[in-house]
Every structure is written in C-alpha cells, then in structure tokens.
Image (tube, rainbow, N blue to C red):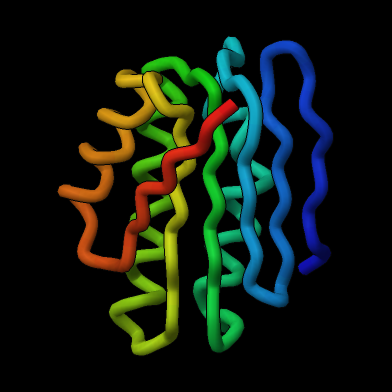
Length: 125
C-alpha cells in the first residue's frame, strides 16, 4: 500500500503514514465525520499491521480534537498495541504544550488504557 501524506486544513490534521514505520498526526482535528476523515489512515494501518517495519513510531501533536476523533485515536492506538504484542518495537509519542491540561490529560488517559510504550512529551512555546 502507498504511503499517506495529507496536509492539514482549518479543521483537519496533517497525517503521515510511512511503511518505514513513521506515523504522524499534527494540528487541529474537528471534522464533521471523523470516521470518514480517518478511513484512509485506518485502512493503511490495518494493512501495515500485517507486515510492520521492525520499529514503529506514532507521533501525535494535536492541539485540539473532538470526541469522535478521540474514539478513532483509541482504535488507531489499539493497532499499534497489537503490533507491539506481536513482538515488534513500537512507541507512541504524545506531545502537549506546557499548560495545556486538556491535551495532557487525554494523553494520560490513553497511556493508562494501552499496553505499549507511550511517552508524554511536554513542549514549550
């Protein structure tokens, strides 16, 4: 399957998915239909799960996201968790701005739900 690169818009994030093992989301995510927005990435990740790179890095730098996006993110993280359970090296990096309690708390919630390496990374702006 082809790598994915989708540029951000006012309501949707930058999305990157590379078969080399790098996946990234960045920006704001408040689409009207999160399922539709993320379907190319979800399909790609389901394909990738069957033959992942030796190491996978999922970088999340979201400034804001809605509830339907939160559910989609958990499903994507579950695919990463499955890759981890298969014995491959994975790492989720959750970036949040210092003082952004909402994004930090969301990351902590995901970290508590997942059985794979999940790193909280505070950034200063």
